Length: 280
Ligand code: PDD
Image (cartoon, rainbow, N blue to C red; front, side):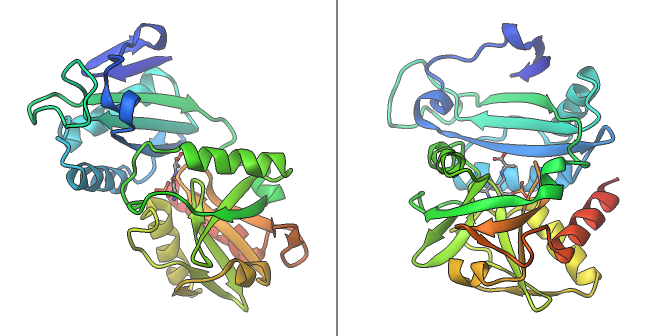
């Protein structure tokens, strides 16, 4: 694989970042994941706008212009021959060559890293035909989940807890209400109405969420943004998640309770289809 590090395109084995980089030592870094379908980036603009917001919220410098970022994305997709897959981008605050809680001076160059992941079958995904089994766990993450930082240890642990329970993923619950999935936004459907949590600092403002909500409204589906409990989701007709890496993923079971007939629901399947159709 050819990867990108601070202005250079290199074989992945030759790419280097300092051991003092604050992304490595302190998770002082933000990221984006943009999907690729038929060799084309999906919603690059949305990801670029969110990246800028994450950087601004953390007083981190922009590593380059949006046009340059688009160029790097496209070049990596081309160099690596990605037809279906992902582009991962990370910006960290860099380092002035030592470990310190205090930020390095503002003129310290940020570290910009991008790489591709080849994922044939991203659109025609067998996992989406089966649907995901979910467990619920407590949400103990920090309070600024709207900033897409690389502090992913707890989401990682959540996914491992799900695997151990024979499931696919975990939904996070705070003060009795579902926030989101470990790496996706969460929805349920009851009597034809799609319910999802409103945007706030408590969840990531998903780029796929925005597109899917728009598509749902365009298809005359009813959408309601409000807090909801895990018990409401368990009693739903169907449920699903959205993310750049899995598009719309039907959920068929929550904490051992099957939703509907235990297969992907019609609204989740339809939204997945129209999302992929529009992306193509
Ligand atoms: N995760 N919520 C969380 C906590 C996420 O990590 C993600 C994305 C989303 C969905 O956002 P979007 O639709 O913009 O991908 C919601 C990415 C895909 C990841 O960590 O790999």
